Image (tube, rainbow, N blue to C red; front, side, top):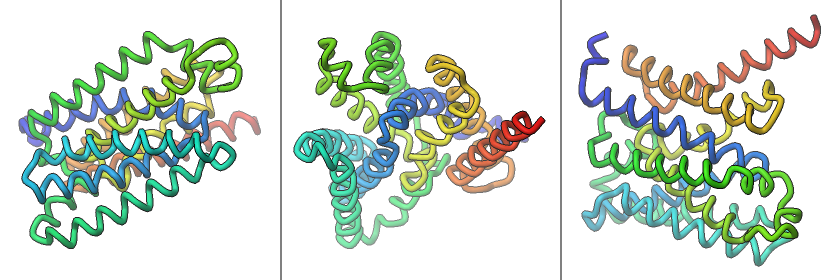
Length: 268
């Protein structure tokens, strides 16, 4: 249990605590809007930015964040262009991000080992700069959601009604996509780019099985998320396992447990 007294692990737990708050807050909106795959898309683009950061010797997380933000604007632009086939925007940006990341990997083979930690997560690489960035993003997400919870609720369930009521739908879509990009960019060092979308979706999937209202779904998703992130990180620290994999596998186990309990109540 000495791992819990290590500064680097305490930073990881604190970073996980923050990510455990932000991911489900945005995830429930994305799931209800059927935009679950946007997490995978932005994470692929973020890795391309991280790779470029290593290549030009610029703070990798910052470059990943910039790339993800640019991708969020591109997604919204393509969604408006292909209104009937909105999922095309996600497929196009995802393939472009993956291709760019692969191209940059070939240009900087000497930093591929460093980029791997961003793809699969590494608690050892989380420093104070990363922690402050994660904390800042958490504050932005929480403040936005608290101040705009009614608008987000309406937008999540009926975008047309939101537009008719005078809500600036386009602006809200852009802001939420940008916030999602920020969360994914700062989360990849904890859980890894290949698994980060699980934080946006699995806690929400659990909460939708048991929640009776939108508000209870949000709080339940937060609870599942925090238990999954902090529990997974603790398991990884004690057993020397991959942190991202531990978090996601624990979340999946929680989802399966919730399904079994819910099925048991129905058959009782």
